[in-house]
Image (tube, rainbow, N blue to C red; front, side, top):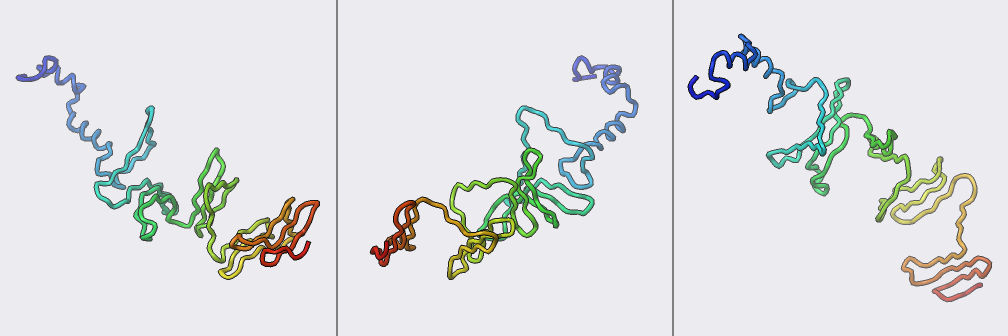
Amino acid sequence: IDGAPGTLDTLNELAAAINDDASYASTLTTALATKLPKTGGSSNAMTGDLHIISGGPKIYLKDNTDDDDQAIIFRNNADGDDYKIQTQDFTDAAAGDGLFIGSEGGDPVALVTNDTTALTLDTSQNATFAGDVTVGDDVFIADGGVINVGTGNDLKIYHDGSNSYIEDSGTGNLKIRTNSLNVRNAANSETMLEATENSAVTLYYNDVKKLE
């Protein structure tokens, strides 16, 4: 056959190359139908597992627009809820672009380490940590927000917009343990009270010692 390579220049060699399949066109069409089209779509979904095995596997999701809506979606066919990892342009202008990880349904989101739930976010945006929380910077709590300590919220620390409170309403006493106590004004410019272990307790007025 003119122009064909040496191993495919006879009809016999061509037939052997397609395994002597007289219905090769049909066989090829059937095989291609099992492949995922590049356009995707729910009607073309994979029915089995996807395994990517390499030294450094990566999955890239790239949108050819600037819609910020690339997503990996885990769909629960039982209740129709979607669980997403998605880049998102949030409607809150202050938030801007961000990464959305969560559920569109009424289920919480949990982060798990070593087969144990480390963090749970419920549908009311409350976070529950299973272990210690270490903060490397400031913690801000709005007016009316309360720091609750104790199983029955026995100790509360909060600011109501006008005053600050340390409220101990549970079992036992409120104990402050220190070997040296110094109470100063809010501007940190005057001493109001000093107390030292095994020594004096001193009261001040306008930063002047009045009673010891």
